[in-house]
Length: 85
View (cartoon, rainbow, N blue to C red):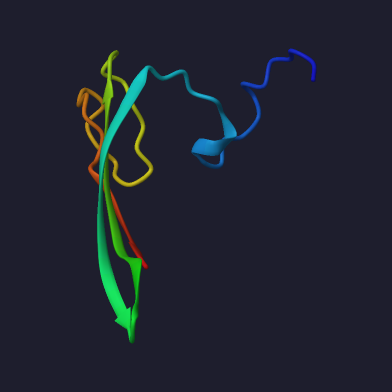
């Protein structure tokens, strides 16, 4: 790939351009497991998994795809996901 000026090309979404960011993400994951007995044997299975994640921008500039937020906020949106077992 050549190093050419692409500033005149149209920008359709955030994925069109690489944006320099200094962001650290931290998170918490919680597992819910259960013991199931079937006659004489027992089995341990994961029932659910919940994840929470948030980021901190050192420079204060960030871009979130979830919301159009104030650029001076250093914390990203709280992102959570649930995975059924």
